[in-house]
Every structure is written in structure tokens, then in C-alpha cells.
Length: 264
Ligand SMILES: [Zn+2]
Image (tube, helix red, strand yellow):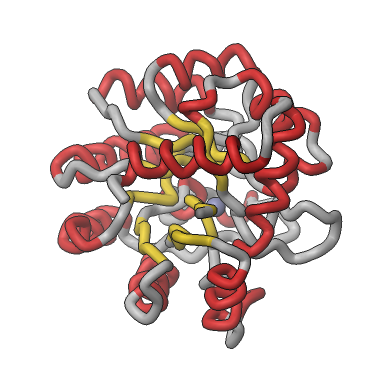
């Protein structure tokens, strides 16, 4: 009865193990895992992988750092991972629009002011176009909002989006409460086991707005270990203990929320 709304099983760290990861998720009681794409290559890999497993559901989108890969100053890139490969985001949005009826959600997409600080205009343009696709096909959005949480909320409200999940939300509790009050969901990864911020969200946000995710291979319960969907029950248990409810009650609430947002 567990669900993972944000997994990256097509990430290179799972190469060759994708089917085993899917099987381990099923064995751990995962009913559904939403596998999220980031750019043209991973979007197609997500669709292909999910076609082979009934419990894997595809979401396709454009990660905000990839959204501006064609406009950012590559000489100024100063991170210890390579600058993302450039592509035409509008051609990719057209492709996403063409497959949107066959996916569970539009994502990963959103805004990022952590990795790139001077590309807000292009990121917002791409996000708005993806919101239009989601609205046209009545699909939820799965959102990355790092250091741009309030701005993302503004854009959703302005565009009349009603179905969305804020994944791995890193903003303040007050803003998370506004997001929940607006009818959006927040998904919490298994790192909640050792991250007080996420424990606070699990304890204080309305029960009917919480979801679970892994963001695997990142955000695992144990430092330095690769995360995967089978870890969702560890996260649920930590959320339940932060809130002072039973794990079964927590899991059932999350399952009900998944049904309400994704219709499954
Ligand atoms: Zn992600």
C-alpha cells in the first residue's frame, strides 16, 4: 500500500539494475512508483522502463537546470558536475504534449535558484508552458522548487493550476502551510529519518496533503547509501513517529492522498 511519487530509476547509478529495483520495490509493498524524467533522454527512458512494469508509472518533464541549458553561460559553470547538455525545450514540450495523455503526471519540472541563479526568466517560461500542457490534459505537476519555492507557488496560483506536488520541499514551514492550504501536496523522502526539517513537515502539515517519494538515488535514510523505492516504508515510519500516529494510519492517509491527486 506504499507509494513513491518521485523516483529516478533511469539515473546512471541504477544502470542495468532497473528491473531489479522495480522488483525490490514491489517486494517491499510499493503499489506504485512514479518514475520522473528530466530532459529528452531520460524522458524517453522513463516511458520505456514503465512500459515493462505495471507498478511503475511514467512522468515526463523538464528539470529547471536542464530547461536553461541552452541559455546559461557554460564558461561560468562552477559546480563539480558537468553543465547539462543543451537542447530545444520547446521541441521537448511539444513532445511532452504529444504523450501527456499516456503519463500519470508532468514532472520533474519547476524552478531552481540554487544551481543556477541568473536563468529565472527562461526557467519560468518553460514552467509556464508545462503548466499549460498539464492543464490541457488535466494532469498533476511534480515540482522541483529549490530556493524558488514562493515564486513557484505564485506561478501556479496565477495560472490556475489545481493539481501539484512539491517534491523535497526545502522552504519554511509557514510557506509549506500556505502551499497545503492552496490545495497542493508535499512529498517527503526517506531522509526524514535523519532530517529534522522534514520531520517538522510530517508533524505539522495537514494529514491530507502529505505524500511520500524517494528522489532516488538521492535523499536516502542512511547517509552515503544509494536510495531506492523499497525505502519508502522507512520514511513512512519516521513520518508517523514524528506525528505521533501509527505507521498504518500514516500509510493509509498517504495512499488516500495519492488516489485524490493521481486518480489511482
Ligand atoms: Zn528529482
